[in-house]
Length: 69
Image (cartoon, rainbow, N blue to C red; front, side, top):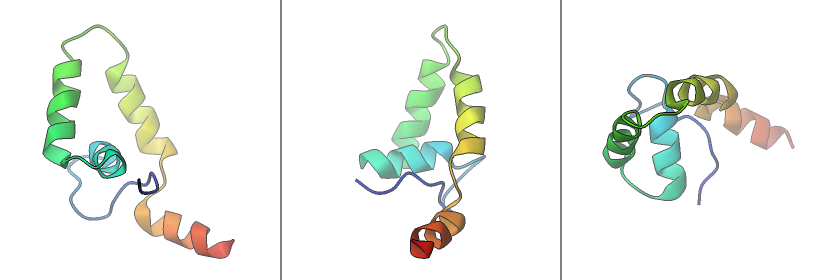
Protein backbone atom coordinates (compact mmCIF):
# COMPACT_ATOMS: atom_id res chain seq x y z
CA UNK A 1 0.00 0.00 0.00
CA UNK A 2 1.13 3.53 -0.75
CA UNK A 3 0.92 6.62 1.41
CA UNK A 4 -2.45 8.32 1.56
CA UNK A 5 -2.04 11.58 -0.37
CA UNK A 6 -4.15 13.26 -3.03
CA UNK A 7 -2.42 12.82 -6.41
CA UNK A 8 -1.61 15.79 -8.59
CA UNK A 9 -2.55 13.88 -11.78
CA UNK A 10 -5.71 11.89 -12.44
CA UNK A 11 -7.98 13.60 -9.96
CA UNK A 12 -11.42 14.92 -10.82
CA UNK A 13 -12.68 17.18 -8.03
CA UNK A 14 -10.46 16.97 -4.98
CA UNK A 15 -8.53 13.78 -5.59
CA UNK A 16 -9.98 11.94 -2.60
CA UNK A 17 -11.31 8.98 -4.59
CA UNK A 18 -8.07 8.79 -6.58
CA UNK A 19 -6.05 8.80 -3.35
CA UNK A 20 -8.18 6.07 -1.78
CA UNK A 21 -8.05 4.00 -4.97
CA UNK A 22 -4.27 4.27 -5.12
CA UNK A 23 -4.03 3.35 -1.43
CA UNK A 24 -6.14 0.20 -1.80
CA UNK A 25 -4.80 -0.81 -5.22
CA UNK A 26 -7.98 -0.45 -7.28
CA UNK A 27 -8.83 1.80 -10.19
CA UNK A 28 -9.97 5.36 -9.55
CA UNK A 29 -13.10 4.76 -11.64
CA UNK A 30 -14.10 1.85 -9.42
CA UNK A 31 -13.62 3.98 -6.30
CA UNK A 32 -15.71 6.78 -7.81
CA UNK A 33 -18.53 4.35 -8.65
CA UNK A 34 -18.40 2.99 -5.10
CA UNK A 35 -18.64 6.53 -3.74
CA UNK A 36 -21.59 7.45 -5.97
CA UNK A 37 -23.40 4.24 -5.04
CA UNK A 38 -22.71 4.87 -1.36
CA UNK A 39 -24.41 8.24 -1.70
CA UNK A 40 -27.66 6.35 -2.25
CA UNK A 41 -27.40 5.08 1.33
CA UNK A 42 -28.04 7.30 4.33
CA UNK A 43 -24.91 8.67 5.95
CA UNK A 44 -22.37 11.47 5.94
CA UNK A 45 -20.60 10.59 2.66
CA UNK A 46 -20.36 14.18 1.40
CA UNK A 47 -19.18 15.47 4.77
CA UNK A 48 -16.53 12.75 4.89
CA UNK A 49 -15.40 13.55 1.33
CA UNK A 50 -15.03 17.26 2.14
CA UNK A 51 -13.20 16.47 5.40
CA UNK A 52 -10.76 14.17 3.58
CA UNK A 53 -10.27 16.82 0.90
CA UNK A 54 -8.99 19.20 3.56
CA UNK A 55 -7.18 16.65 5.74
CA UNK A 56 -5.29 14.65 3.10
CA UNK A 57 -2.14 16.36 1.92
CA UNK A 58 -1.54 16.93 -1.75
CA UNK A 59 1.04 14.61 -3.26
CA UNK A 60 3.54 17.42 -3.81
CA UNK A 61 3.20 18.58 -0.18
CA UNK A 62 3.41 15.02 1.16
CA UNK A 63 6.71 14.44 -0.67
CA UNK A 64 8.19 17.58 0.87
CA UNK A 65 7.06 16.59 4.35
CA UNK A 66 8.38 13.06 3.90
CA UNK A 67 11.83 14.21 2.82
CA UNK A 68 12.01 16.71 5.69
CA UNK A 69 12.25 13.82 8.17
